[in-house]
Image (cartoon, rainbow, N blue to C red):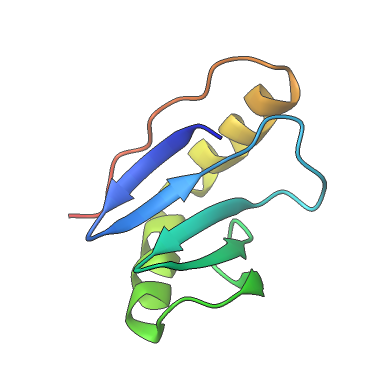
Length: 85
C-alpha cells in the first residue's frame, strides 16, 4: 500500500489493483476511511477537521489522484502528491 502523501498527521495511501470506484485510503489518529477524488467519504470515519483538510487537498490534486489511479491499475510506481501546507 504505497503512501502517496502526508500532511498534518493525515496519511494518504493508494492500493495497486484496487476495486472501483476510484478512491484512496486515509489513516488519521487511529481511524481509517476511504475517500473518492472529490474528498467525500465512501467508507469509514475520520474526524471532521481532517475531512475538511482532505477535501481541500483533493480539490488541489484531483488530476494527480486520477493519474495515480491509472498508474496503479497499470502496476506502475505511484507518484508522490504534494501535501497540504
